[in-house]
Length: 112
Image 1: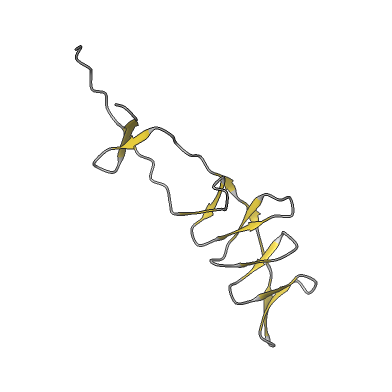
Image 2: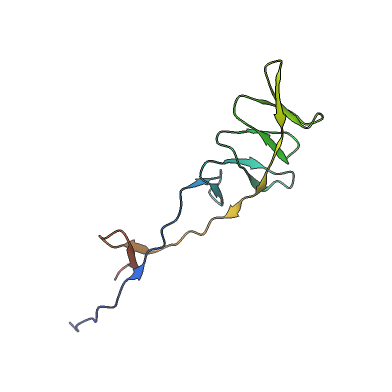
């Protein structure tokens, strides 16, 4: 059996926490909520556990109701705040066949 040469492992890219949207193809930053855009693609509301508005453009904080016509989020009878605008979600890049080394900071191709 021939001897194999050891090569240096690559530094692992540490990703920030993310929110994976349904279907697993898109992602949003941690602390945000995946909401469908009017285009049918996923968007990110910059609020945790947000309420996605039916217009496909806006969202409200958890516990509020969207009032798209008034351009506000309402809670109960008195509290109103402006609607938040969603942004396009990022496409997920899924690395296949990668093995993370014991140090947790390096990675090598699977099978090496």
